[in-house]
Length: 338
Ligand code: EPU
Image (tube, rainbow, N blue to C red; front, side, top):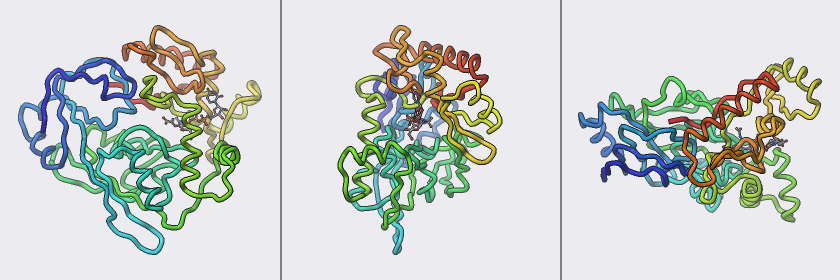
């Protein structure tokens, strides 16, 4: 266990925000976590558990202890005719894990290729893309209760997954460190190409025989064409959630704004493309200092160099206000503000 003081966080968050942690500790296993959390000095301090740092915005230095979850390891825990149950340590990189599963011919997460961050962060916000969400393949996870120092197991229902939601963003927030995640993957692939852009991309790639690798490659190409690479331009993916409104509200907006983009969630609810709403308010490609709105995807805020977290936050406030004014919709941030 290595403890450093006044540790720079710029490389620890994909937004590339320059902030400092009072203490920074990398933890490789559960016993190190227990040891640390039972130390009086650290127990009484504010704590922040960090994975890949791909979904947060630092608006200040962190005056407590940042715990970097570095638990590694991938193993096949059981299998049957249909499924392979694969467990991964929370500190494994998500995309490397996806590639590993494709290599082993385990299907179900190929649509989630190239999502930045680590395994442990996946269930926090039920990561999703191109028609698939983590909950579709999630079996269970283990998490350390930071109060009792016991390991607890959470099933799929126990995680209370929703759209970019889980119990770990609600009542269990700040109370657990996820240590491992087990997915139930398919040995016989069920391809999901329902998201229009995938079909189009596969066609352009000239794919004749559908495979999980081909879908993964298509998703990688789409993401690379639309989303900024965080190693080049700092960002945390979608900054806001796509808002869910009543179908009545959607119908009345559609009358006023016929081009509005919405997807029916159920008979009563429609999910709107926040990127479209933000673009209509004139924000796409706008820049204020080093903070900006991405030129190809208005849902993604970016750091062109040395933006302060507060500047990015201020920009997000302005976007919230204009979307509220024009459409009467209050956007919700997806990114965690620290
Ligand atoms: N659109 C615009 N202007 C924009 C951006 C989008 O008009 O600047 C419209 C387009 O009509 C487009 C539609 O919005 O067809 C949807 O856009 P896109 O396919 O890019 O997806 P999204 O709804 O903006 C969501 C997720 C992404 C995920 C993609 C693909 C959320 C908050 N975001 O974005 O997830 O990759 O779908 O499934 O649900 C993330 O969470 O960090 C993330 C990148």
